Length: 130
Image 1 (tube, helix red, strand yellow):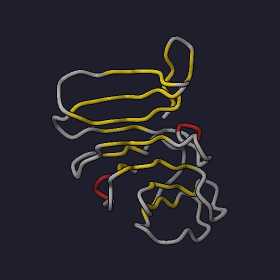
Image 2 (cartoon, one colour):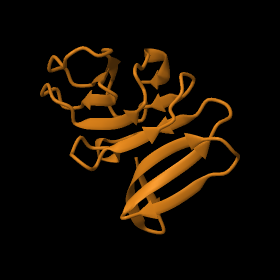
Image 3 (cartoon, one colour):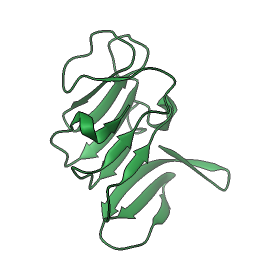
Image 4 (cartoon, helix red, strand yellow):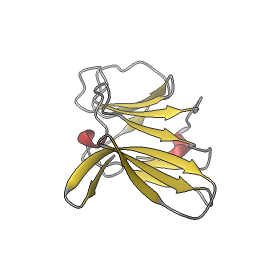
């Protein structure tokens, strides 16, 4: 997730908590998005560069619950959730493994897109909008 605030782009950390407010705060070039509990929350991604699988550039989501959703439907390709299975070289495979949501965008068998989901032990297909 890259937030564009006043023409400056930031990689984001998303934190869910209690309350009613929304806060954007820049910490060393990293934008922290803090949202609050209520109904289910949706987080939207539309491009690989929103959270590339490069060390230090992946988004991190804290406080993701069973009812929350990650919306990947904005990607320009057909996506398929493969649970925690290994990538098989099929473009558009999405998996959740070891606390990280990953996508093989180009079919080379490795993750091109990754979102760190601290504290999340498992993710169901119902948490994804593909």
